[in-house]
Length: 152
Image 1 (tube, rainbow, N blue to C red):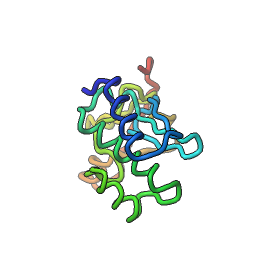
Image 2: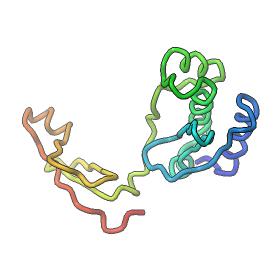
Image 3: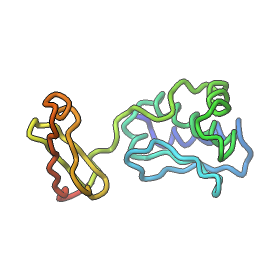
């Protein structure tokens, strides 16, 4: 688990190294998204919930990912220029994180007859299929949702 104060020090060092002093760093409350580069406010944020549960390398890679976005500009996305820039500063990951999410913060919890657990952060609309059960049964296996009594 990464220490949040140490993450702040890393982030500020990366910003000083690769960007100008108009950029700032902060933590946000995202439960699924690891990081964000806001070009309007010139601010890079990392989820405090995910940073607190991930190891140092995962958080450092998230910071590199976001710094690379800031370096190449707002309309580049995850294209070739971003990929090249990210690699040059030491990023080795993909477009999105594959780590765990802060599922305990989800407001909705679902289950299928096969016992698979599902979470949603927004109220589910319509019918949802349990992918593993639907694949194996070759028919739609529906998830039943309940509002979590107390989201963390």
